[in-house]
Image (cartoon, rainbow, N blue to C red; front, side, top):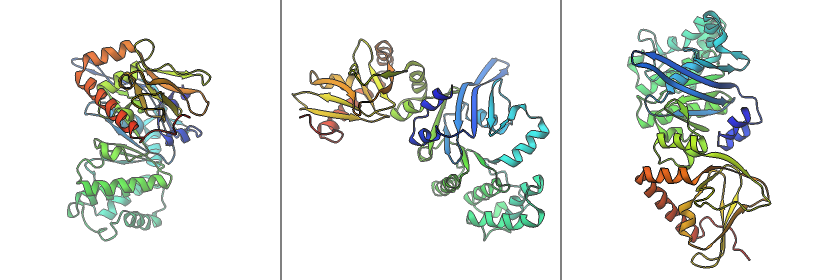
Length: 385
């Protein structure tokens, strides 16, 4: 199971993480809500790991399951089935009293609407979690709160009430409050949703710096531009995780189509001693390479003799091959190693093209653009001798 999870993470940071024990492991998470209209599945067989010092963004449209996922991580809600392990604790096996203590020691939670107490000063708001948990000695609490507020550039506003500072400053104060008890995990639910772009960027930078210091940051957001700057982006659609390789390779596709591809594309390992079959209408119509690199070798003619290099995360489709006419020699490993790819079979590919003319046009346009780029030697290795 874990090997499969790791293979689907799809980033250099995740690959390095494979060598470490995950700090958080969600396994086979299903959450079903009973409603007047029947059962509603908010999360469906979610498997994912988070690592110490990793900054992960969780994106998806409204109703995709983002908030439900956060509630599983914080222990606010319980899964219908599956387990959540944080360090050595299976959190949903804890009693309410144990959960409260665990949450106070391990989690810092940041909300979209700040949730600062309006009658307390900024300083008092940051000290409040320390007063509740008593983890920090009484005589050290004010100094620690001051230190945290200085870290988020609020040392000049410590005696102000929340209403007397800007939205960005209120969110910075909420971040300082979340760090009060020095938790290893920060969970932020739409923390930039009510901020202007400049304030949102400042908040993101704070999160990035905290991850560099070893904190694990999990940020739920609608802002895809911010999400792409994190170490890893998870995409949820209809309560399921979209394969990260697929989401990164086809960012222009609707989330429902990305989820469909996640179900349709199958992982396949190719032996380096044999050439890889080209995309066609018999075995495979699209490859998304998850290891490599590989070479797309072309012969004489319009394109000339070239070896087009495809790195992990790049794809080769039937339209790409068709654009070369008869100039294609084959597809092979560069380093003489086995190559792994996610493969879409021709039946599924043709069904996709028939169902969505917009996607068909987009894929064909992308193929033409890639051909022009390759022809200009923008993505080619040395000529074949």
